[in-house]
Image (cartoon, rainbow, N blue to C red):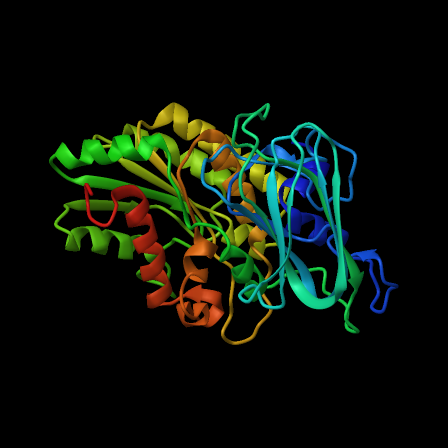
Length: 403
């Protein structure tokens, strides 16, 4: 995928690449505050169809147009983060000639928790139309678009919904907004997504493990977010093994994650895993933290990760589970780079390849107070590691092994 497409796929990457949003504080009313702003969708996206806030209002093809995946779970909710509490007075929602988008509603919030619904609308099935909703100026940071149903006639399936663009018109606050997001912002967005995405392979694996005997073998490839280090002698994969053993399973954990391990390093480790007399039943891929900390290129990371996933499919007959990195929330107040770009790159690829995955950010965002899940250096503490381990257990085994 070209770099310009990736900037649409991973919306935070566009902001980081730009270095600044280019909008000074105090701009005139009518500025599109949603332009190039990050958003998340409760459904996975149709591969490449990610142009919801790219400024392109006349495209019905990727990457200029937006499309959800084909899940039958409704409503499908999109959350756009404007980057600061702004004064807004109009929202324009452009549907697509691809059709299928039907009942929509628009809501706004200053904090991603308390929402005010502004409008409901029904788009026609076969006409390009813009919902232009003006209202008395409100103070808000988050715009929620709920897609409640479909016309059932989409080109990519009955539940795939299309939009060309969303615009949010208004004024920035006096201090403007920053080009980079931060962990708290990422966690607010992540709260809108389900933490677990399963696949048929998980169902098959559960049936297999319900009747299989012997040791359950788990291998982990990843970076410092999953590795055993001097600072973290019991990372979350070790906590996962402890949970399974407590449920009565015999577990063998081979955690070969290491600080600064890259996906291309994972490729070199695969032959040893495949050549073992007892290859793993489950392979966990947990990358992204160190790449973000190093300020790496998201496009290169995505390519290397895709190569690794392809090699895994060729090499190991194991259930592959992807765990995306949670945001780097540092209780010491130190600035940490946003991880959303890397997490979304992994998520997009996992969805395309049909791999189950755990959204690390969404797992922690569901905690009553996510700040209690972090320790020094923006690392997960025992509470955070337990939540992530429990999420992986729920995805792969249900509430209990074989459940």
